[in-house]
Image (cartoon, rainbow, N blue to C red; front, side, top):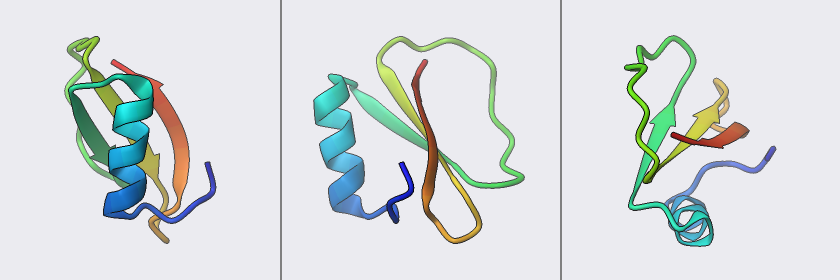
Length: 56
C-alpha cells in the first residue's frame, strides 16, 4: 500500500497472493462485480500509487 505500481510490484503481489490474474483499477474505471477468487484487485490513485488490495 502506498507504493507506486510497477510491473515488478504487480507480479510480486500476484505471486504472494497466489492469484492467477491481477486487475488494476484506476480512479473512474468501471469494474464488473462478478466474484473471481483467483483474481487480485489492485486499486491505484491518480499518481498510480496502490490504495487498496483485495481478492475477488
